Image (tube, rainbow, N blue to C red):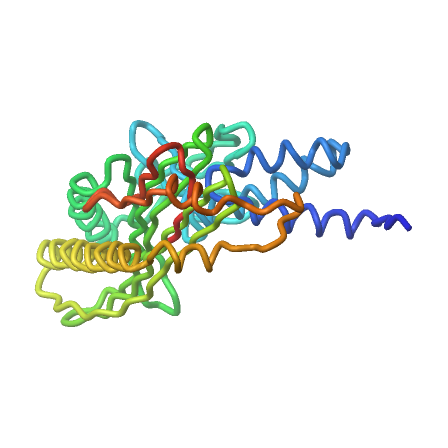
Length: 298
C-alpha cells in the first residue's frame, strides 16, 4: 500500500528534513531532496524558509565590505532579512546560491551603547583571532522593555565533506548594560558529523552564568573577553578529558547495532582503530585523522 501525501504534508516533511541538515550540509540535503520530490517551486519555497533558519541556527558567516558578519536570529529584521551593524546594511541571504540579495541601507542610533558595542567587539576579536584558525565574531545590540543588552556571537567551523566529516564550534554570550554589576549568560555549543562508516552525530553544549563588575567601558570589554576565554578553555579541556576517558569498549557499546540494514555484521574493531578523535588545545574545533568525519555543537 502506497502513502500519498497532500501538499501541506509534503511541505512539513521537506521542512523537517531540511532543518535537520547538519552544519555545512544544507545544500547537499536540498539537492538530494530535489531528486526525490521533483517539484521545483515547492522545493524553492521550502529551501528559502529552511535555509533562513539554518543560517540563524549555525551562525553562518559572511563577509561584507571586508568585515565578517554572522547570521543569527538576533540580527533578523523581518521578511527573511538580516542586519549588519558594521556596514549599516540590511539584506537577504540566499543560502542555496550563497549570495546577498536586496541590499538596503539601514541606519542605527549612535549612542553610548553603540560605542560600547564596538569596544567589546574589538576585545572579542583579539580573543577569537588568537584561539580560532578560521573564527568569526559579532557583537549585536538588543533593547527589551527599555533595557539595553549586548549579544556576542562566536563561530568557527571546519567542513571536510570530501573526507566524510564536518564540525562547528559556536557560542553566544548576553549581558545587560548596567552601571555597576552585570550578569553574563552564555552557551557553548559543539557539533560534529561523521558519515564514512556510520552516520554518527555528536552534540555537546554547556550553559553558563557569571557576574562582571562594571567600572568603565574599556574595563568591561576586557573583562568580558577574559571571561569568554576562561570559560571556553575550561569547556574544551573538559571535552578532551571526556574523550580520553571514553574507552574502546565504551565506544563500541555506544555505536553497536547487532543487525544493520545490510544484514551483515559491522567490523567495529576496524572502525575503532580508524576512528581517532583529536581536539587540539585552543584551536576551537575537532580534527579527525584518517578521513574521519564528525559533527560538533557549542
